[in-house]
Length: 174
Image (cartoon, rainbow, N blue to C red; front, side, top):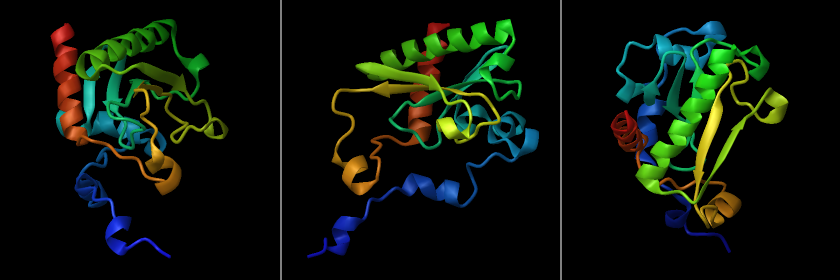
């Protein structure tokens, strides 16, 4: 016996603007890199989901987050491998990652974090050409039946709202 049609739908109206192309980078980056495209995009940071910028790195919300508040820390420079970072870039990525953790803790009090770099497509990097470190907040029990059974993540907040909370908290730490 199948599930009634009404129970097979999960409404995600926030995705419509992306499907229609409104949230996609307009600038051309290195080899079509969406992260470089964000940096060349003339829209304000609140429209590109960039949360914070520093001299060498920036933090942006993941467009396809694992959990609410899933940030990525990236160097401005288009490099693929961690060993290609300069010393100052390595320090900047590490310090921005620490700051991202503090900001997320102040906004949503996660119980822990997954932090990591996926180096190369075989390691799970969706965009392997531009190094990015994931900062994923985790809560006890945050993996419920939806991802396992329904192959669907449930996110309780719109990305723009999450971005605003994080950006405000980031500024407050300055």
